[in-house]
Structure formats: structure tokens, C-alpha cells
Image (cartoon, rainbow, N blue to C red; front, side):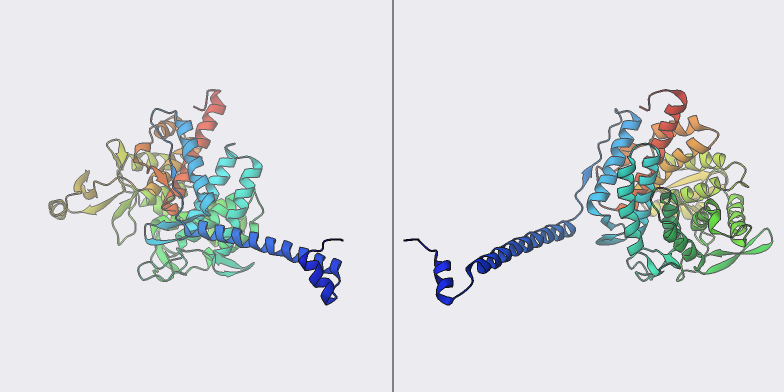
Length: 429
């Protein structure tokens, strides 16, 4: 006598179609397994996103050749960023989140690394595509096909989280324009350019004429020198986005000529007319802007002088503030970290703190740019080889807005070193 399973005996007793019942039960079991797998995958993804970015060690040693150190540094930075999708805390925000400025610097680093032969076509396009998608979804006040702007994405001082900033929008638009040859993103580039044009303006007198320049942010209608340089760089590097001979192109040139004329020998440029602070990162933005302007005679000499003024021992300081002698002496007496700096007849105070990561990264990038485009490549290559790796953190993933400036800087420096090796036939190491 044939032995029947309990399920079969029950089905026969109730009059069910056994083959059809078996098929349905099998299908239900398979769907249940698929659902369980999807739930498990989502739980793993949520756990990864909730976790703090896993720090990646910076495998740096002064005994290792410069190109090897920089390649390892760039690889660690890009891999850390990619593995966390750009989510990190920030010097001004303790909540882990995505940052548009960091994404822009990451995207440029990917493009430059590809140009230098450090990433394959497939690797670069895959990373760039994901980066552009994040920038598109993270835009503020976006009107698809019309304009887009970017900002901090978190509350800072009196600024709301959705406040658009000139500096962030300019950096993002610059990065998108650089990536457009790698993946198609011309539409978003144009949106960013129009987003810049929509920012409020304020008149500045240049050569006895009033010129309207974009302000720092709608909530802070002040003309800030370093952000103006970034805006002008985007305009002049992408003339096809402006009508030929338009006022915008001329205004950008006038702005950079104005900045060139406001250079303080032995120091550089102050933050603004109301804040007499010389910040290393802001010098980078201004010098890179001047480099793209044909009417500026020799920005390279200004760069040599400016970066040298921030040198301190074997490293660099982050900022200096104009003062008078009495206030400077009083400041040093009150603070254990302040000290006095004399530049000709000018007196400044500075803090005995090393330069921040984005300042070092921005400066390293400028070394690379001037090594390729300047008249003194050997000088700039020597600065790259003497870059103070001992000032960098041991791990990355804590603050991507700063760290991706370093990634872009490392990519530009490597591009310069590889160009030198190609021209001379010497080893890139």
C-alpha cells in the first residue's frame, strides 16, 4: 500500500487538486525566500548607513617615494569616500550626512585621476556617474532644466539648512563642467551656471566704475574675495555658457583684475574688507582664479610669495590676522597659542596650530596646477616632494569636506609628477 504524506492525505480528504496545490506551495515558498533575502539585504544596508564611516589608514611615510605616497593617499581617500557614499560628520556639524562641497571635490579628484592615467575609463565613469547623481539629488531650489544651487545642507550660525552659497555652487558647477567630458552632464552644468546667475549681487567700485558681483549668500549680502575668484573661474573657464562678449565674461575679468590689484605683498588676500584675516584655503581659491585669467600678468609669482608666507618650520599655519602692535602684544599675553608675525610695517597675530586638512589639500593642488601651467615647474615639483605628510591625519572618513580637498590636491600633484616623468623619460617615483 502506497504511503501518503499527511499533506497529501489531507488534500485528498478535502478534495483539493494535489498538483496545483503543490505548485502553489512551492511558489509561495520561493517568494518567501526571496522576500527574506531582500529584507536581509535591506537590514545590512541600513546597518552600514547607520555605522560611522570606517576609517581607512593613510599609508604614508616620508621614506617612501613621493608618487607612491600620493598614490596611496589618493586611493585611501577615494575608496573611503566611495564605500560610505560621502556620508560623514563635519567641522561645523556633528550629524553624519552627505555634503555637496565634498562631492564636488571628490568628482574633480576622480576626473583628474583619470586624466593622469590613475583610473581606467570604466572605473572613472562608474564613480563619476554615481557622484553626479548624488549632486543632482542634493541640489537646492532646483528647477529641472532651468537652474540649481548648492549649500551646506545643515544649519550654521543664522543660515538655514537650505541656504544656497556662492562658494558651494561654484565648486559644484566647476566639478560638473570638468566631468562633462567623461560622462554626459551638460544639462546639470547649465543649471549650476544659471544658479550662480540667480544669486543676489552687490556693486563694487573697480577702476572708478561700479561692477555688480555675486554675494556670499542671500542671507549674507557681502562680496567675499575668495568666493568671487571661484565664480570668475567658472565663468571664464566655460565661456560657451555665456553669450559671446557678454557682460558676465567681462565682469569676471574685472573681478579678477580687482583681486590682483588688492594683493598685499608678503601676505596675500584678506577674507573681505571687513575681516582682515589671511586664510590659507582662501588664498588657494583666489590664486586658481587668477591663473585662468589671461589679463593677469604673472599670478605664479604671487603664488610663490603667498604660500611661502604661511610656511612655519617644517609645516604650514592656517591663518593670520592683521592687527596693531599693542593689540598683538596683548593678544599673545592672553593666549598661550598666539604669536606675533611681522611683515614689513604690518603686524599680525597667528596661532601655533597646523594648517587644516582642506588648506593643505588645496595648497597641494595649487602646487600641481602651477607645475603644469606655470613657468617654474621645478620649483612647484620641489614643493610637492616636500609636502608635509606628517601633518595629515592617520585615518580618513571623519570630515569629507576637508578630506576631499586633499583628494583633489593629491590627484593634481600626481598629474604634475606624471607629466614631468613623461616629458623627461624619468621614473614617476
